[in-house]
Each structure stands twice: as C-alpha cells, then as structure tokens.
Amino acid sequence: MTIRKARIQDIKEIHTLLMRQEDHESLVLPRSFSQLYSHVRDFFVAEENGELIGCVALSITWSDLAEIRSLVVAKARRGGGLGRKLVEAAMSEAVTLGIYTIFTLTEVPGFFEKLGYTATEMDNLNQKIWADCLNCPRFPDHCNEVAMTIEL
Ligand SMILES: CC(C)(COP(=O)(O)OP(=O)(O)OC[C@H]1O[C@@H](n2cnc3c(N)ncnc32)[C@H](O)[C@@H]1OP(=O)(O)O)[C@@H](O)C(=O)NCCC(=O)NCCS
Image (cartoon, rainbow, N blue to C red; front, side, top):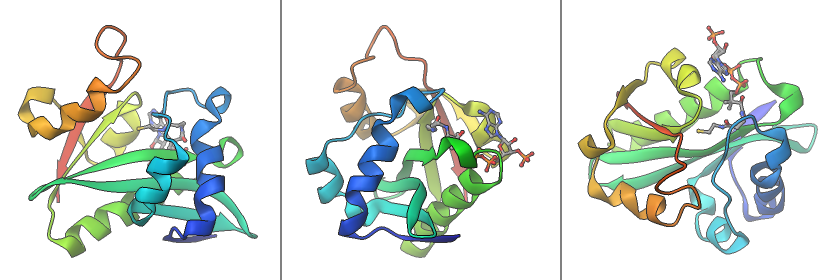
C-alpha cells in the first residue's frame, strides 16, 4: 500500500470513493468533478494493487489555517490504521507549507480525538470556513458536524 499525492487520472476513483454514500456511516460532503479537478493538488490517495482504497484532502483556508476534508477509507479496509496514515500525510504537508493549525468538520469526532484533535466552537475558527457550510445541504438545521482542531 502506498500513500502518495493524487494525479489527475485518480479523480474518477476519488469521486467514486466520496460519492459512495451507502458505504459511509457518516456524511462526506459530495464534490463535483469540476471541484475535484480544480483541487487535485489538495489530495492524497492510498493505492494498493492499482486500486484506490482511500483519500484525504488538505485545503488551505488562510495564512495560518488548513482543513482536513474528503477523508474516506474504503469500507473493507477500515480499522487497519489507514485513516490515521492519510490524515498524518496531510498534516505533514501542512507543516512543510508552514501551517501549524489544522481543523476539520466531522461526524466522527472519536476518530480525530485518537489523532490528538480537540473539539472547538465554530466561532473560534476563521470566518472563511462558513463558505462551505452555506453551500451544504444540511445547513443550518441538520448539521451534525463537530469542529475539531489540532496545533502541530
Ligand atoms: C473515519 C474513517 C476515515 C476512519 O478510517 P480507518 O482507517 O477505519 O481509521 P484507523 O484504523 O486509522 O483508526 C485510527 C484510530 O481511530 C479509531 N477510530 C476509527 N474510526 C472511529 C470512529 N468512527 N469513532 C471513534 N474512533 C474511531 C480507531 O479505533 C483507531 O484507534 P487506535 O489508534 O486506538 O487503534 C473511516 O471509517 C471512513 O472512511 N468512514 C466513512 C467516511 C467518514 O466518515 N469520513 C470522515 C469525514 S470527516
């Protein structure tokens, strides 16, 4: 299994991973092909035998803030440490870029707690994070996400 930066040829499989909602116990925000092609540089993928079995994106939000998003591990591969490895790869890139505060909006806070994240109020984060919320079908009344941060 290899974790590497995504290539443009990976986008169709990334799209499939993100859109396979019936496999997800929690919601991952759907992303269009247009968004995925524009943000291909944000993505890491986990590849095994030529197949993508996980992905994650590091999205830069502001001068000192980045977001972990679009995290999915293929259902058959969960529980083996792959989610942790993907998030660690994204956090490592943040440090390389000089960004030391990471946040995520998640319905699986227990997973991120294991990685050292702590819950915070949305209001403690830069206002730019609301842009995605405004476009989310669950905003404002059906949002179950918890904002979590880590200082690296
Ligand atoms: C959440 C997800 C990425 C976790 O991936 P994974 O490969 O199963 O996670 P890991 O095996 O790396 O788990 C790392 C640690 O978190 C724990 N953990 C994993 N999922 C958890 C959960 N839902 N709740 C609480 N703890 C969890 C593991 O037990 C493990 O703990 P340990 O280090 O003490 O052994 C995966 O379940 C998934 O793709 N879910 C569907 C999509 C989703 O919800 N994405 C997150 C959106 S922000």
